[in-house]
Length: 281
Ligand code: SF4
Image 1: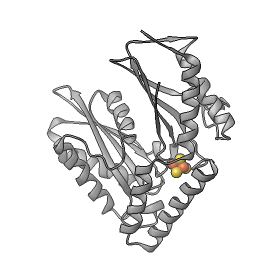
Image 2: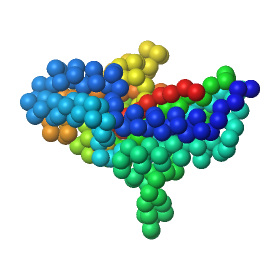
Image 3: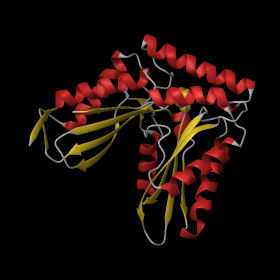
Image 4: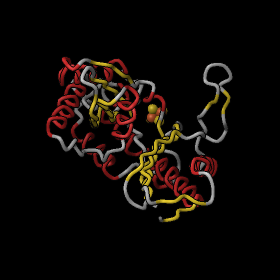
């Protein structure tokens, strides 16, 4: 067994949330530049220029890319030969989030009792933690500060097997069309197909963190990603919803085995501030 102390976990989570809130990754920066050169609408071009400029300033000055610094989502791949010592794992993750949001001057956006009190927890915790046990003696973290303008536009459909690829693509495109300007386009669309209702949603969210421009390794699903992207970008919503071709930068589909009677399809929408960072302990 390899021992990993909760202090290392707390420090890693803190570092990753600060990094994700300040720096858009290289692949997304490149995709935004490509979109700028491909965009035909002049207002669309000027919005993309502003997004690119905003990202450069945030990175250089280490300030938040967006005022909505998101709900703290953490995907954990925990090696089964790891022994966590020195305290409680969940507390360590939440402490890392708390310190990052405090020290980085990041907005705390979490409210408890969502129906009545809606009282700010003042720490941006609790984090949403998904843990998968994997072989090995390491812990991999993928953190995602998830903005809610885009999260609010997400949708789930329990389609039937007979709906097939065409029905799924139609649902993806309709979800983006209905969202219009609300998710701060250009977006990245994570799609989860299969499993159960809630599993489809989780893999849709994780798909957003895939390196942009990397298609699904299964060529039939990669073809669905391509077709959905093309149809979405024909809607004319454009950057910030002001018209143009660049409504979505990428569609990332992931899938799981499912029941013979079902076809859950989850669409998790992410804005152009698609922030995520990875680290391994
Ligand atoms: S949806 Fe994204 S870009 Fe829009 S306000 Fe929220 S975090 Fe910012």
